[in-house]
Image (tube, rainbow, N blue to C red; front, side, top):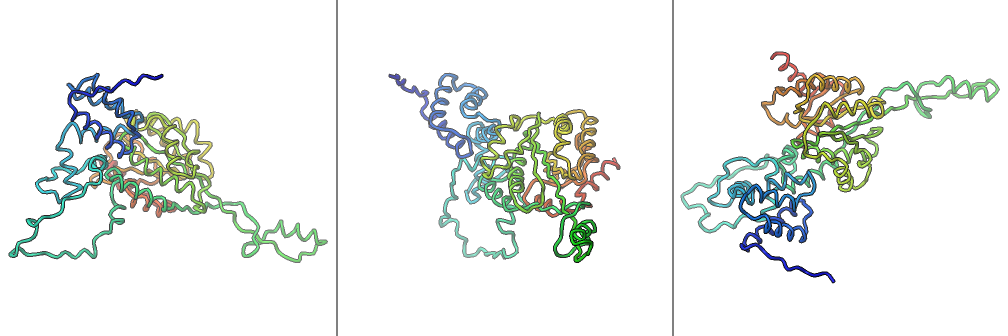
Amino acid sequence: MVEHIPLELPDNPRLTGNITHFARALRRGGLPIGPGRVIDAIRAVQVAGFTDKRDFYWTLHACFVNRPEHSRIFAQLFRLYWRDPRYLEHMMAAMLPAIRGVQEERPAQAAEKRAAEALLDGAQAPPKDETDAPKEEETLIEVDASLTMSPSERLKTLDFELMSLAEVAEAKRMLARLSLPIKPLPSRRSSASFGQGRVDAARSLRGALRQGGEMTALALEKPKPRWPNLVALCDISGSMSQYSRIILHFLHAVANERGAGWAQVHAFTFGTQLTNITRHLRTRDVDAALKAAGAQAQDWEGGTRIGQSLDAFNRDWSRRVLGQGAVVLLITDGLDRDDPAALARQMQRLHLSARRVIWLNPLLRWDGFAPKAAGIRAMLPHVDSFRAGHSIESLEALAAAISKPDDVGEKARLMGMIEGA
């Protein structure tokens, strides 16, 4: 018979309630937390004490976080809930602007909007009282909103990193309907045609031999379409994890779309190491596919080793997946601390192996972006197109430009900045 040991709560019952509420917020934020973990956290705090904020942070972190991708949402929620109460006020002001007396002193940072949404749990702004009604002598201004953006149009331009949980879910649904069509490549091979086409002399002569040398009909042929492979290299380091997660949803839809034209879709993730997640994209259920991909890639939200990862890809995978005129999508911010010369060599090798290399960089969302980082300066000369990759609108622009061999995106402008420096 198992002896049930009663749970001895900390002296301050309010702290216990706060830990419970904090765990509920984490669960709404996507962390798999059940009652058992909440009890473990309360017991751990009882043992560790509540004297040092840093110890308290890592005590709860050990109890609630068991996957690297959950660390960021935990950190944001902890800051909102425990470390600085004014953070919560800022986020409430951003999400519930009708609350009186609360001013937003700064814009929401990455992942804070999702964290605040989990804490507020669907809270609504308080109804206006009579004091909110305009005075008789005040002038009412009517605003014509007929030409303003609809919610879907606004969502298309919103940065993936600044989306709330509901906005991320809606963005994923929109990306699931977005296609990435490609035109066939020129080919010298041909297939039989029973309508229009050019004369197939060899097949016509063989047919005539079967008729005793009399040619009764001409056989026709048409060019056989040749479709390229799509190879995606996604950076899943700390600064890129949210962008890569949503773009991988888009790539899953492309991989499972029939008639888009791609021969095969290959996907690799890299942070500190290279991981091939192609087989997971073939799973029809997107949530199951990305869950399995996340379990295989052990370096989510870790460091960045772009040069080493490209070296591993060029050495082990390029000959297998870059045949048939493959198009490479490189999704990274280019912020790498490795040797720029080695990175440039690997990018040159990748560029020579692929038909086109398209670089999606979320840093292009900034108007004042300049190629100042050594990694970006080393990589930029060895890509065919340099485009933004931070919103639904930027991915729609990619879909329109991917079949244009003369599209260079922002590369020419940025190369001019490098050469003029």
